[in-house]
Image (cartoon, rainbow, N blue to C red; front, side, top):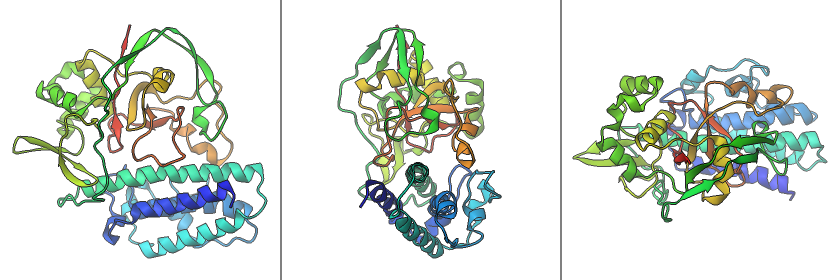
Length: 385
């Protein structure tokens, strides 16, 4: 079996493995616009291969259903019409059983196609499709956590899942001298277009923590009334706090003067030594202000990252999500994958415990709007020296 085929088949199986603990009713729920129903993820990742590989390159391929492209297209305006994102939770049909039949149909045809001689064009789009599905695996898991974590029963997703992680090392500050550094992907191995081209940046001297901020440190921020100190917050962040009554990270709640949080294996007491998670950029900024430190830029993060053990949380940076110098958006619909989102969002670096195997890398640029926190997000502090 070729390496590409093996990666494709294992990726398809892993998506279904993530859904294995679910009940049928769990597949349909969409509590907020940012969270998609699990069954939509199953269909969308299947549609991607049908739309961009099989329909385009596999002679004689017949679509599984004429209207599934409309149902499972996400944001590819140039491909055709689509169901509005807010309506994904209203799709009682196709049912879960039919979506699994759709997945099997497309996977089997892709398996046949991968036995043929592939061109560079074929390989490149299939690689994108595989990593697109891996992205959705992470979204799928965090969406499931949001769905179950907002259910009044707070049900367990997986009794063996471990959300709360403790970094064992003592805190140190890694000093980085001023200078010109290379940033971005070097074209060796897979990357997305937004990680290129590699280019040079100048940075002033700074230091960055070898550890992420912990729950215990965040409790100090809460106990010092940090969520009510207006001078710590951006104006938009302060408005967000006031309008939404934000007083702690997502999934935290206080019960009988004991802070607890919802995790993938149910409700647990807050471990002060564990890494804080599910925080917004607004909260990250305010906490850094409170510490008299700052949020690092994505360039500072990438330069220093080989010197610390990253990968437990997506880490907020101070950088706006913008194209690198001389960035070239890919032609056609694939050009909609990253380029059109390069406005009004913040870059996150690293990866998280929900990121699938064979998907993480030093140059990966994730991006979300400042108030969002349903992903496994955290904070690493920096300071100028």
